[in-house]
Structures are given as C-alpha cells and as structure tokens.
Length: 274
Image (cartoon, rainbow, N blue to C red; front, side, top):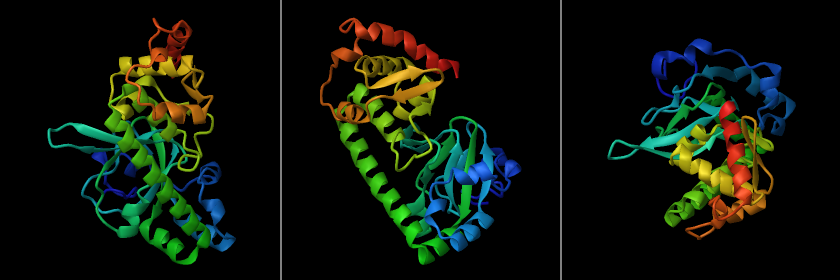
C-alpha cells in the first residue's frame, strides 16, 4: 500500500496501521488549521481525520510512493530526509508538534521525494487527500493556511541553503533551532522544545559532542536555556542573527574563551534525561 496512508501497511512492519484510531478532543484541538474552517467545513474534515502512533524508526512517508494523506504531528518528533548517492542520508528538517507537511506533494499528487521518519514515539494525524482537495476547492480559510505554509517553507529552505554554504557548525545548529521554533509552521512547540541532544544531532547532521559545544555557546550568549528534557529559546531574533553569522570561530562557543560558557556546559546534560 502506498506510503502516506495510515490505514494500511505503508511503513516498516505496518506498526502505524495497527494503531490507527479517530482523534480525541485534545488532539483535534491541537490541529492548527481546523480553526480556519467554517463549522460545516470543520465537521466534514473532522469526520475524515485519523491519527496513528509511530514508533522510533517508523516511516510515515517513503520516497517514490504516492500520497494518500496529508500529515501533521500531534505529539513527538519526525525528520524529513533522503538518501544520497554514496548511501548516506541527508536530513532536510525536523517536524515537531503542530507541524503539517507535504502539502506541495499532496497538491500535485506526485510521489514523495523524501522520507518522513519518527525520531521518537509520535502521534501523527492524517487528512485524506480527497478531503484536502475538497477544502482547497471550498474553503478560503484553508487556502490561506496552506499558502502561509508554502511561503514559510520556502523561506526555511532558502535559509538552510545559505547556512550550509557557510560550513559553520554553530550556525547550522542555530539555524535548525530557529526552524524548529517557527511559530507559523510549528505552533505546537511553544517556548520549550522537547528534544535530546542526540535527536538534534540527527537533524543537524553533526556529532552529539559538536552539538553540545554549539549549545553551550548559544546558552552563554543568552539566546537559549537548556532545561530538563529540552530547550527554551530566550531570544529568537538573536538566534536568527546567530544562524546567519559568517564567523568561522565564535568565542562564545568555546568554554575556554568565554567563562560564561562553563556553566552552560553543565546544563546541556539535562537534555539527555528526557
């Protein structure tokens, strides 16, 4: 069965298929685009929505398969990636709670060009592709939501290309955090992102130790604070500036060059207790 369908064996082991159910009230309340619909449109959409539970490693979408659902994250963390020619994997972005993805693929009804995989146990919602297109044809509010999604996503990937050209690991970590705290694409994150250093390392494409170093530097600058089981952004505009920095060597990222980073280094261990 094609990837992207929660109600059949589209992922490894069919594990999502085995845990499909209607969404409950709290899960419906976390879906950001539902409030853009009229009462009649919302009733129609809610009647077709389903949710499934993905275990770490489960594929929600797979390269080359045709979409049958538009997906969003209710709880957990997913990653968007692809395989390159040498057999490695390239990660494009993470998808935290509140994020809906793949609208371009669903609109064009073309095969997926990327994989979507669960990094941790996650609850994923799915809107059937026909319901998606019905809302595009009938709902002004839904169209505005989708246009905002596409616009934000374009800006996100342009920024990613700019940062990758810098070859600056600290900027890459900062850019990924800015992306994950995007209030338009991921309204369910809020002020604290529940993520471990290892999960962030998977998304950034760096070692956990290098990510730890970058987090220490960002914390020492007062841009983020490492808390129990996650990260809190204290200065999102400042983090955006840090993500676009061309400096190859940031003294704040080196504890020996910045005494304030010493205390920050101790706090990063709290992320791993999640």
